[in-house]
Amino acid sequence: MANWIPLWVHKLSSPPNFYRFAGTLRPWALAIALILGAIALYGGLVLAPADYQQGDAYRIIFIHVPCAWMSLFVYGVMAVASFISLVWRIKLADVVAMESAPIGAAFTFITLVTGSLWGKPMWGTWWTWDARLTSELVLLFLYLGVIGLYHSFEDRRQGARAAAFLAIIGIINVPIVHFSVNWWNTLHQGSTVRILGPSRISSAMLWPLLTMMAATKFYYIASLFGRVRTDLLAMESGKDWVRQIAETEGRR
Amino acid sequence: MSSFFAMGGYAMYVWPAYAVFFFVLVADYINPWVRRRRHLRELRARLARQAARQQRNPSAP
View 1 (cartoon, each protein chain N blue to C red):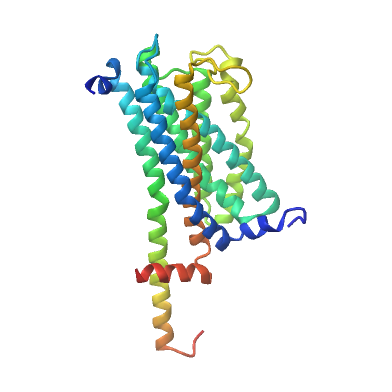
View 2 (view 1 turned 60 degrees about the vertical axis):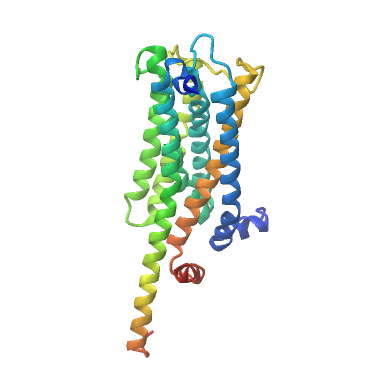
């Protein structure tokens, strides 16, 4: 381990410590996600006015866009964790990478399905081979490829290494998804919410969208921590700390 | 209230979208919980077998 990494990071990345740490934080992350999600749904479905062109159909935006952002964000986390696990061989990093993949795939799937349900009334088609839609579909296949590669090896570590390589190579698709609406002439609209410059959306519609974005971030933390905990138990099943957990839970 | 559920005539697109969002995330959340219970059950069975073997043959490791 490189000596510039602070000691607490080293301690936290030991499986029993991280198991406890994640167990403490997870209920809070889930609670915050549910509260923010409920506020965002109320703001988006009830308080926000109907769109002057799209009527109430635009309300799909409040889940479609946050899930699309998450599909890219989770990929970024997965690629960075994969890189860390390949370079420094930190066990926790490859668990984080491999358990991020199903969550990212779930968000990508939701993005595609809700986009399709939005596209039918607005564009008149469920699907079109447009740059944005196609690159998002490629993103789903990358996630599925990472999951499949990980499970196709007898040895877990070997599978995680191969899948980490795929995750790192696949990061090239993330900017393609993001900039596809600028680079190509697409049916999909351009970005409405911008980090630089004013967003092209009314504030009554913007705040539920941003609240839902925060809710999905906290959901990701909760889901990831649950998955990582489960994986750590499975990987370390020969160790004493896992044995103790199995015995305490068995007595209940 | 019924106008809320009608979604201005787009109910058949808006509500399925929200249903997919909800059910996919619930399934994602439940999955590790089910796996965790299975792992711990298998581990307890293995520990019980080991303990039984130890009783029958105390000299073995």
